[in-house]
Image (cartoon, rainbow over all chains, first blue to last red; front, side, top):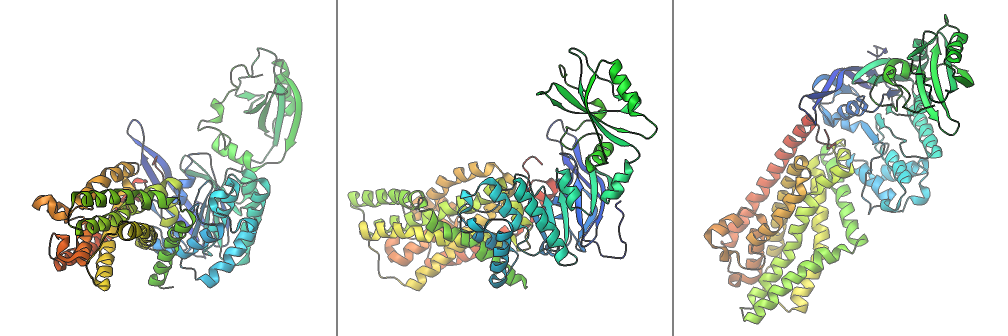
Length: 347
Length: 270
């Protein structure tokens, strides 16, 4: 359960959410959510971080009234998502990364207007708001361009703007910057912060694959994997979960035909990073506990005739927290880190 | 904001894209107006060559014009939610606070407006180019019967749209499978009476056939060789319209709940 302020009515309050799906093969069922408890306070930017298949999108679909939970209950803006869906819908916005909403035949301006009508926004209010959102999304020159003539990045920016056209209380951003270029993504992040801080009570639930995005934006972050919330707290508090040592990244060159398949070196658990084929090296990442010395690890590597090309140390990042809790990187497949060994033939 | 105001805005918002579409993609005029007119022209010319009564020509023109609405109901209403689901649009409808019936009504209203615009071409071909003739008629009666037919027909489209929420890919095949049989059962190019009692009974449950027959009766009087008295057909159209609207509402609510339970509303794999 996430720590929270018990005095306020939460923007999102999910308790014991379970969602199962029938497995596509072999019968049985897949447990997408396995007892999720999340409470988000009004005014928060709350991050939901997890690898593919962790249950993030399932949770968002339940909270946005698109899917029923198998068990458990959830309230958004104080309303039950199953029993009072229309009250919830009046108060929320949803942006899903990579979606292709709207009709190609409409212009950007018309498309945003169409969505504003589904929320009953009067024209006098809608048009100035739409123009502001178009400006924010950097689409002023495309305001009168048909959607089917936009690039995918421009279309994604329009989708982002669409999520705010009804002035919701709670916005659900599911990988919102997917497919955006760096500058557009930065502008969207700045807008989210500005939007939340402009009026008290506005709330954002963000799922993202980009650790930096979560670090930059979120007041609190929940790390979710295999349908369970593994940790939920502020970034500083999450960092403390894995503090107590240095984060070390080595760039290694192993002798031809040699391999380093050990899960630990000098008593330190290892996580292999990406190979660098252009240099014939590979990264090795680990957290060095205070009671261990880096020299011990280096001595073991020397004994295995592994050459250390570079050494870097740094403070705890969200990615370190994630790897420590989940057991693998956010982009890695759904298997524990200790099972991951360098591929055959890797240097 | 009242629920009525919200839903009226939603209707207009959804109808707008279809109305705009009529002007921005004139290529649809070819598939939805000119091509169906060819079938109509063939029947008019056939009746003329056979020396059939002149009323048969107008009868085929009315059927040909209404066939464009049937195409629109099948592909623009029934199968529409399927396309919306594929494109990710459907979930945006379902997170909006407006009624789903308002979205469907917007699709229907826009579809009727768009198709009416296209059917002007059919009217021109039938009555100006081919010179089909009708009896003196009451315009309010014609518009009234047309409006009733559209309500019943598009309400049927709403029922189909609800069902296709769950059927997914099969929507394409079902639409294809329904196209010709319903055209035939509706007697678009011949008097419904020619189907015999059993065929006429089958046609009676499809608003297209009754609507065509009723409009012919308004335009041609006895020359329409109507299936039932006009008043009876109007009454049946009213009943069908109310029934299909009710059924669409119930089906939409039920199927939405089912889709949410099974996770099929927004993702095909779920």
